[in-house]
Image 1: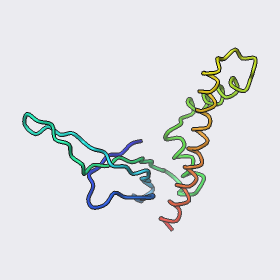
Image 2 (image 1 turned 90 degrees about the vertical axis):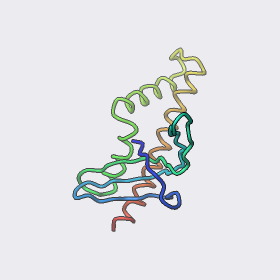
Image 3 (image 1 turned 90 degrees about the horizontal axis):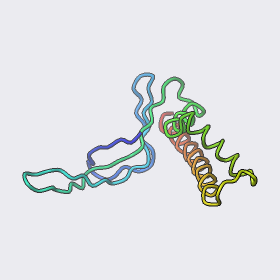
Image 4 (image 1 turned 30 degrees about the horizontal axis):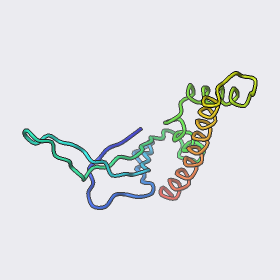
Length: 131
């Protein structure tokens, strides 16, 4: 899920972790986010805001559980099922899909695989942080 906050100092980089009992909170992909606040009759852009990904991991804080939590946060079972079903249709040259739709389905699968790779990188960084 997305998490928003106020910057204090520099924009964080990399992966940040917070252990709260059995809960492991992971923050990554930090980016500046301009926020607009009303100040009387005018809107003022506030530049000290950030946005990042936030994933909570319950249970064991091991590699597999962390990777799974990161992936499941973005791709629940229904989304994954749709991606794999669409991939099969895209691979089937007799499916009747337009080339545009075939390209879209192949891209969504590639995006999913890229996110899985990112999840594995984040999990490795998390394990380094919490040792």
